[in-house]
Length: 293
Image (cartoon, rainbow, N blue to C red):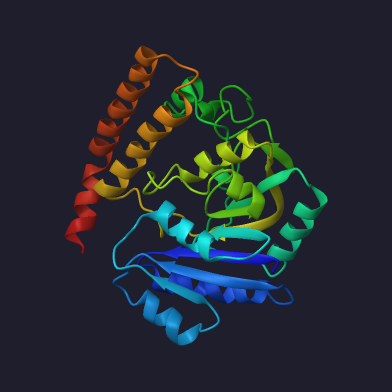
């Protein structure tokens, strides 16, 4: 089998249905399988998949296991030479999968690749290509200084600003909204680290794929629409907490060898400060959201 498409879903039934429609079109003439892992949705997502998409294998979790663990469930159940982690709030063009398979066949060192992502208005999403987080990149990212130097390799390192939006290139990481991987590379990376409940797992696995000797590519010949925020929200306290918890995990796992304990403690303190500031800034929006439920 050539391709396994793995979609982790949680309470996004309408987005998931639209996503599956575009996936089925893009999978025509490809030896493939679709695996939907439902993280205990309460909106009837699993029932919808079972009723309208019997060709998709459905894994129904009795609890929300988190994104990383659910991805691993799908990966362990899959058989494709290539595996795609795809967010349910995406729309893929008809040629997306054949184009990525051809690209990976032509680039044998490529372990993972990601497309050019746009939002529903067609605006480019800079997280399509990213650099590994480090002290300087974090400061420039959270201070928003990168806004003033969008093309800088140093100041906009996090979004790899020196690489053009339409330039195919090797990057540090691509987004988990559409993460196309060579199976052997994903296996050597150890699949996803399940300590990440949500956020950070995509950068982490890209780092492990690179450490295993593979390249990670940004491939903008394919553009995918991402209805950003529908499947992973930063508009709730839990979402904010998950994001900053993931940053702590990343620091201890991936920066431990390069920085001594006191320096890492400064990183952790910075994360805590950023978390508290984020809560303060987002409190009015979260309150309004909760009132409108």
